[in-house]
Length: 222
Image 1 (tube, rainbow, N blue to C red):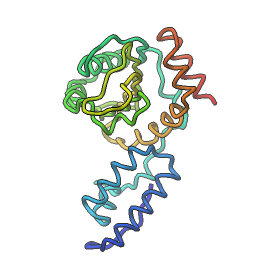
Image 2: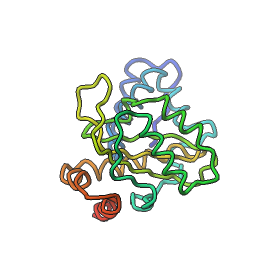
Image 3: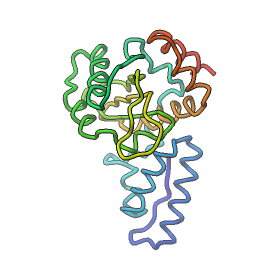
Image 4: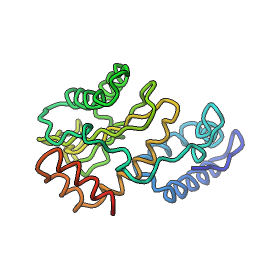
């Protein structure tokens, strides 16, 4: 993702041009709509010049220069990191299960901060675009590679203060601190996979965790 820089103090016309360029670039990159909304809010809040600096990051590395994750979700799926039938009635036990699953492959990492961050964020509206889906993400200190934890809830969990479809299926994205932007690439792949009502129906209907894992891999191959 690359934005042409604007001079400080840019006019509202410059802001509109920047928002238009951002929308076009996000469309080309295949970034989900809810991510575009977040980025547009940030652009409007701080202005084109500061936004360009924010996109570049503290080390001056543009997002487009960050090594991209492979397009295949299967490269990040692990059978031990999938729970296909979690019986919960609130957000905290969902977070607990996500962190417990991650601990299976990251036994030496301190996941307490990631746990607190997810717990305190609650059911952050930006993470739940609709369709019964959730995409919570958080960075983890000393994590070497992006990791996806998949959880399907036995009973859909309603979103607070939102009259939308309850959440049934969650992809938790855990990111290394030094490459937090990579979740945008993963989100793009997951969103394309889950945009199909037929795909969602298959994943909601699979019998158990192993079948869910195999179905995810099979759908990702198309």
